Image 1 (tube, chains in turn cyan, brown):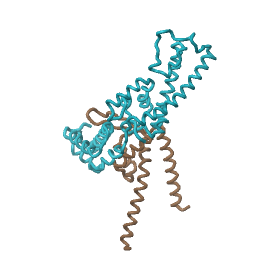
Image 2: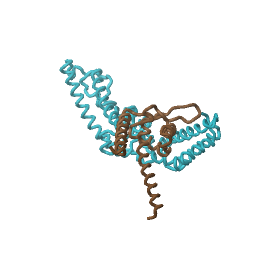
Image 3: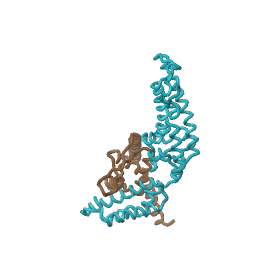
Image 4: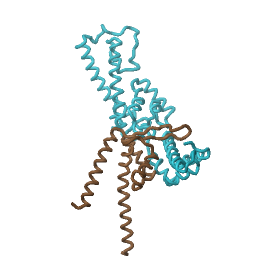
Length: 250
Length: 124
């Protein structure tokens, strides 16, 4: 049900006043603003309906606020739980966690490569050696993706097989562990956790989005540099901003 | 001690006890409601009151923190839905598979507990 102009203005001002009681991050503030407005509107609408009105008036909203215990109570219900001190982490600990994770990922990739070498040599008769080398001047993915295009003794399509397998290990590791409880083993060791900016746990989709850039170290480096230069206050990589995630102490 | 003060303290004890029971049942009530269909916050507040005939009257101040906690624990998940243009969207909550199992075990616990206390009170 629509609100009168006066009701809308009152709702905006009231919600802003309630939120002003507590320090909140930008994203948290947006979520809670919607939720408060939504609640007061729904409660006001119920009253308007029971009175047979076709629009929600300011009086309906004021009644809804009073019913919910006033501004203090609503602030306690909505804002305080989210305003719990969430300490975002910028760089040091994250780098440490990344180092630990990459050691584990590297072990995983080595194992997968061994298995692939074995499959190729013994079951497909492909030998890893100069006779299968990529031609001079052919695409070299080593810079962009060092743990995939690992062996110049292989033709490009076969390197692609290694690249895909390596990428699956790397991205699978980060996305799966973060989607499970917001922590990779490295983050667990350094007491870090990934969460959505509204404080909710990350889903696989968000974990995937924020980690995809880790497939390419130069792009990751760029992502981190941009964070340090432009988003140091929000402590988010560009990928974090895309995924709507933050890394906090936990 | 005066008699009236004993009377007062008995009433206070009952009130405190009732509050404790209420606190524990809010969580179950919310899980039950969102297990039936996805619901938004205000709907949950009013449904609890209506469905329990006003016995379990939970304030907004309790429902929303409980919803946020349940969501943080991964028992429920939420999505914003546009209801009609020009009015605030609504946040609909529903159970996750994890929450469905949690709900089932809470229901089982609750029924077992209520049955046991009832048998105890009946004295057989």
